[in-house]
Length: 379
Image (cartoon, rainbow, N blue to C red; front, side, top):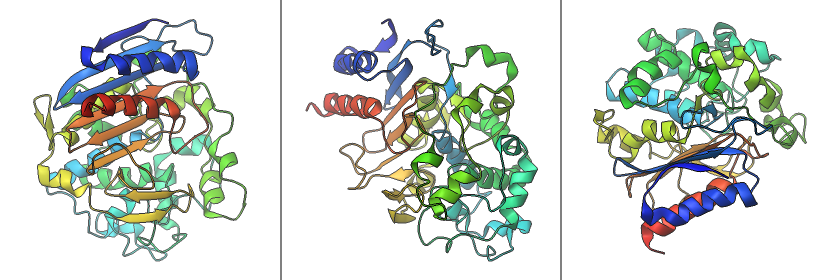
């Protein structure tokens, strides 16, 4: 197995774990990156970009990272907060007037960021191609009544969160979230991450290898539960990632494309008080808002204890993510991960193409994170 890239000598044990993921944990193609205090100390990639193992994973290979995309959508909102153009405590309807129906007139913007708006799925049945119709999905969400009291607890908005956040961004800026992200975050930070991929770079996209079971099978035991309804409409299928229309669409909760390096480049400013790689992205006060607890308890959709801040999961006893307190994170279906440790000024990402049937953790990324912290703490 050829492993390429850079790895600071003191992190040799992390490189060994990355290699072990291929020999012991069935990785096919993957990348792993770490920045410390704004400096990239690990940027590794290896394996193959396709299931047939005919295309080597290259330095510039990108793949669909699914819900790790949500951390990028959150950054877009935080940037607007930092510029004074968005108030997280405001009613959504003050930016999106059509939203103020069916009991949603007092839903707050922060409810979108904490998966607590009560709109984790759609009453109307929609399919793959409906997801490519921004106006249709946002209109359905604007018209729908919440499934639970907004703000009371989280229920993972697996697909819908991106449309909710994205429509607020569009109403404020006049730009789609994918365009806003590209122009205001990805380009300044030189992050090769895309929410809506240009057809010209399709040749760099790796092939996702589907897990054994999609979420609608994992969480669909009780047909009338919020979990079942969430994944029933809209559903999700890993094979859609092969569709050019999926790649070109903007689905800001689920179809971002990047690699570990690009995730770290985009998120490192959060780890470093708002600035990194020569870019002053956010003020430190805005970064601090991420850690304002919004919900804490068993998620209505994922069925596991989760603690949400503004746009990210937060460190908790039920879901520990390293030794420090001010850690925020989120990961994607199949195994990708973005982890930001503001105490240690560390940003970590793992991105792969061999998906496992999980939405709440992966042994491959867990092993890499553990090895990274072991080196950092001298443990």
